[in-house]
Length: 312
Ligand code: GLN
Image (tube, rainbow, N blue to C red):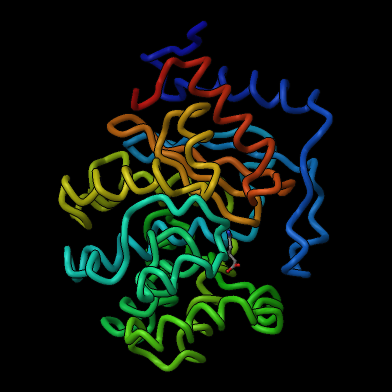
């Protein structure tokens, strides 16, 4: 069934309302991430979903204006910011193949000489942040400025408590960074890089903020102010890597169920892109065993099923 009023400026609101009702009736919602203690206290029954249209109209259901910890969702924006600066040279330092392994896995790195499989697992995101840091001197600050500009929300900020908690429990990310540094694939001092990376992951933003910030990918690379961040081809590349790698070792299942470029984070957020049409953000902090929001994936699955929109 397709429910959508193409003439309305809030064309997808009836779909979102229906999805929120369905999710409300669903009992199992997964468990919040507990390896970052500051995230463990989230209520797994929280749910919000927002759609941002190409003209910047944004609307949603549930807790769509409630800020949450963006975590790995930010990997999309740092990738775009670095790709815009250095272009294809980036791909000599990070691959673009699905890893088939958990997001914080070390196992492939030694076989593949310190070149991570893709920019959306932690190892790859560390490489991207390192390269953005070299080019800007403040990768996390660049990210925050971008998110504020695209969302129009100047109050977006880092969450010092979450960043500190990740630093305290950051042995695995530190191991990834040091290991890649041993192959010459990290430029900056590892503590500097980890500080930038943990602050990047700690940004708090709502579904409304993130849907708006993702709209440049639905606009084929054009930012909210009409300037171009990415070429049309680069925007296609980012969307393709989101589709194939954005939900880690569940990317195949996500493509099967949702059929859109998407990126999840352990805070329970997922962004998704309908190229040429809109951007979506959904949030619910209960995760499955691969680190993706249970209600978030279910809601996106229903969205593409009810609207008939997908890249396929
Ligand atoms: N900050 C988290 C980490 O590095 C991000 C992981 C995620 O959201 N999948 O472990």
